[in-house]
Every structure is written in structure tokens, then in C-alpha cells.
Length: 624
Image (cartoon, rainbow, N blue to C red; front, side):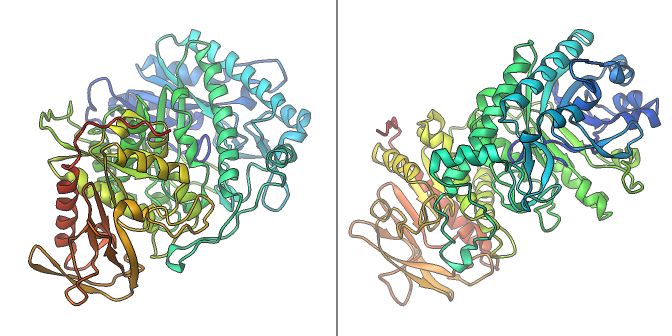
């Protein structure tokens, strides 16, 4: 239940969150999610929260509490708790929860047949209830339905107006509390297809002449060709557009009352839990005053103690244009396995690293709760919270060095095609993207940025002004993105790839093309074993490994292209080919795992630097 607006836009769970007594950077936000039962169980909680260094509290306002009877808005249910928070000099982030989550009473107990949407809304709008994967009616509303939109906008307008007047200057923003996750297969509340109802089916039928496809399979890159889905991209756009439209409509309702709209996003560039519609993140930039990106240090299969995920995603969101970003680091998965103590140092690191990213203004910490009885939420465990020490610097270090600008493309289309990818026990596409950023961003002469399809397609100056664009194992790309990349190169930019660039289209259909004409690829021969290559008169061994799932591609270059790393036996083939402003690897040097790891990473970095310097920096990308 952590996600707010759905795969991309996620509803943070009703887990209690925390931070530390160490000061965050000046004017930054450190928020903790509190629920009514947290305060009722400890009347000194607001004072303790403030003492521990929090600046804000994120608090849920249930539609079903406020408008239990149609047209009768009662807000006093929340006054006592919020009054006590504000009296202790805590700011507020208020979540307008209208997502249909199971309802918890003031003591944290779940009430059967009660949800955060009023019963009368369901009764009047049975046509707007979604169905799950088994064609059973759920308690999720279709927020593309006009009647539902009118009712929910009225709830938002009245609620924002009331609390903004009661607590002037104390509310950072209002979060759009949808539970419209657009998930297919295993959702957070079970095996469901959450955005399915007859009206959406009919709308899709009008547009494409058929009903929405049911996606219920995995495509693994190790098996070669993905299972092609002719309507995959159309379905993706359909879902994302509906979600984006609803988000922006509700954001406008909040803004019309003079308040800031907060939008929560789940982790992206992943296929865990079969979460989809991540591309909505690239479509609602102008609708969000504050964007929150969250991570629970879990990849859908196992615990993942990676301190770099939130900083990387923050970098990406900054590239997309989000001006104010909050990172959410949550521990509920670790708490369930009684390993939270092991996660705390990782959270400390991820907060500190996130604050080094542009536009990050704050953080939320969550999931530190004592275990409670079934169907009852627990309250905050302050003993665990006290172990968090962020040690965040007051400001970002000054760096006046002129750096090489490298944009690293993260394609949401690629992750749609490879949904359920688990070829190497991990998602190899994600790992190639993240590891490339980690390696390049650590080099003192490189300014690395994760960029999205939005930056490429819209001729965004951030992308066009890059010295080089690197495409890390994005094996599925839309044709229009490949056209834009080609235009960027033709106008003076440098292109780099680590293998299989756009070998499949947006529906998973093979194209058998890595943009061979641009990268100077005459032919490719797959090698399932390792190889020995000569680079600068030095021998370098490449061994097979799990993450290098395919072995490597032995590339024969076209005339005019340099074979940087020829095979010592078959000298006409190799694993690195360089053109005047292009560089292609026949494997993923950032994912080498054996004792040659550091050597290949150094080669990777140096080759990127060398080719990026070939950009004349005169180009302005205007692709017709």
C-alpha cells in the first residue's frame, strides 16, 4: 500500500515514518508520515517528532471521514491531531486519500467493507468500479469517469480550502491520493488488473478496434526475441494518458485554491511487481509543484540494500524538469524480515547522496514500526529511528571544473517491452543503466545525467546540449526516438551504446538493427564464450558471467571505423568499434563481475571521455 498515484504515481502507505535529530540542509524538508493512532497512543509524539529534527509531518485525510454523507463535509475529525502538530512547529503535507484503500479506524484497526472512499460514492457510481484480473469488482474507482471526477474534485476543493484557512502558511502541499496504479499481474493488493472497467474497454475499442490486451507473461532478454505484443505501446500510451490527465486535473483543483500539488511516484526503470505506466512520470512534470520519488529497498523479489537508487532517480527527475524533489526511503519490507538494523546505514547514505542532486529539497523516512496484531497497524518504533544519522552537508560542494556532459538514456519503452525481466536473477536492463551512471558520475571530469525519452523527443536543451548521449542496453526503442538520436548525431553530437540499441521496436518486434549505419557495424557474430582482446598493445581478457548473459558480440566494422579492441585471433572482429563521433561496445563493460572488473570499467570510462571530446559543441538538435 505504499503507492499513491499509481505506478508512476504512488500512494505512500500507512506506515509510520521517521528521521533524525541531525539537521538537514537549511530550508530542507524532513517529513514523517503519521496516522491518527500514532498520536492517540502517544500524546507527546508531536513534541518528540520535533525534537528529533523533523520539519514536517505527512498526514492522511480520508475522503470517507470528511464526506461520510454526500455534500456534508465534516473536518473536525482531524482537528485535534493536526492542531497538536502545528502547535509544535511542524509543517504539514496532507494526503487527500480517495484511492479506495482499506479503511483503518482511529485505533489502526481495519474495518471490513470500509474503504477510504465513502460508501455512497460506490453506491451511486457502480459503473465506475474497476475489475480485477479475474473479472471481479474491486473497490478501486476509475478516475477517468466524469461523475467520479466531479465528486472527487469537490472533495479536494472543499478540503484544501478548509485546511489552508485553518493552518495558513503551515502546509507544504496537498498530495493527490489515488490508488490508481495501472498495474497488471501482481498488484500491491493482490493479483489484479486495476484499471479495467467497461468504459475504458469501450474507449480503447473505439481507438484501436479491439479490447485492451491482457499482458500476462514475461519477456526475458536471455531468451532472445521478446514475445511481440502488437498493441503493447498503444496500451501503454492509453494507460499513461488516462493517469496523467487525472493527475493534472486534480493538481489544477489544488492549485486553484492557491496551494501546492504534491505527486508521489513509485520507483521506475524496473518491472518488479509488474508495475506499469511508469512513463506517466515524464508526462506530468508541469502538474507537480513537488514530486516525491520512493524506494523500499526491495526489487519485488529480494531485499536490495542499494544506496544509489534514490539519488539516481532524483537525477533523472531533475533532468525531466521537476523543480522540487523529495526522496522517500522506506523500510517496511526490511522490518517484516526483522532486518531493519541492517538497512539504517544504507538509508543514511542514500539521504546524503540524494541531497547532492539538484532540486532535491527533502526526504521522508518510513516503515520503522513495531509489529502488531493482524489487521491492526502498529505505531512508530523510536528506538530504531534514533539510529538514523544523516550527517547531511549544509550545501552542495562548489565545482567550477568544466566537465564533459554525458546524458544516459533511460527508456521507459524498453522497460515495458521487457516486463518481468529476470534473466540473470536481476533485471539486466536496469543494472546496465544504473551501473553506467554510477561509474561515469564518479569520474571527476564527467557530468553524468539520466535523461528520458521526453528529453530526446521534445528536443530538450538538456539532451541536445550534451557532449555525448549513451544508450545503455536499451534493447527496445520507439522508431521516433531512434530518429531523434540520429538527428542529434548528424548535427554534431556523439552517440555511445553498449550493445543492442533498439534491436526491437516498442511492441517487441525485432528490427535487427543497432543503428548499424551510424555506429559502423558491418556484421555481428555472437560468442557464448569469453575472449582475449588487444587494447593499446595490452591484452585484456573477457570472461563469461551471469550478467553478461549473451557472452559478447564480435563486431566487424565498416570501412572508416576503428576496431579499438580486436580479437587476438580473428583480428577483423572485436568488442569495441569507434567512429568519428560514435562508440559501440559488443558487451556491457559496466557489468563485468570477475577480477577484470576494474580494468574494463576504466577502459569503458576512458573510451567515453575520449569520444565525447570529439563533439564540436556547435549543434542545435532540430529533428523534423
